[in-house]
Length: 253
Image (cartoon, rainbow, N blue to C red; front, side):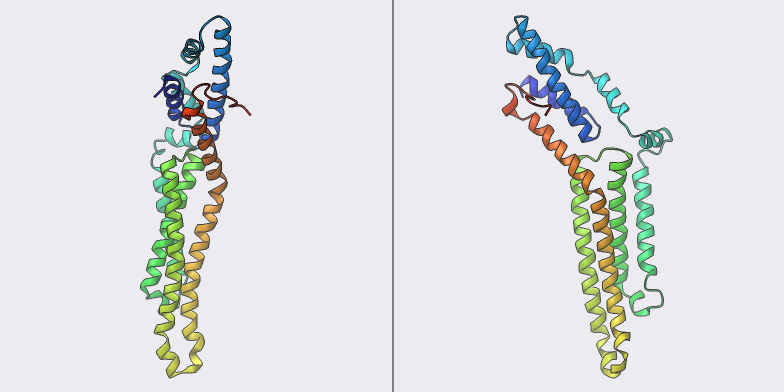
């Protein structure tokens, strides 16, 4: 890897701060590098030598990067780390959200024995709990800790999409199963139509409700997710080999 790219890429990757702020810092560093390189060239240095000197003067040392990372830690995350629970807050929150969501699903069909005894209800409670836990971990990473790494963000997206699909599928299958199980009762007494339809409708509604809950949670995080991904793509563009001749040109738009 060429020295310029290795220095700048290493600096970008060691900055454990929100992507938007990281992009701003890399752009500022690129503009300063170009300005300092031009100053060295006016003093008679070759472009390559001027670039090396500029890199040596401006690329932050390890201690400076640690200080920058510490300065950009959100206040909430700083307080949690000081309290000794910074690494556990996501797990605690996810567990609490999962318990609340699962319990809520199990208590919805109170008095509806046909639904309460169904395996589909327990499966839907599990899906709702996982949706709540997944959302809570994503929200904590973005809004409390300040950073959601790309691999964690991709995993969050895949889990949320899969769980939403699972909630809708379970709701539909459960409704069909409840309707099928009630056919015998309906044949024996046609007047009990609502008695047969109600469990099917309730099972389907629980599945759709869980899916809506998951989708709304996703939408709440979507603006920040899009902003972070856009910033990271911009950083990668600034560090591509095609820009090595004059890296980070026009970085500040």
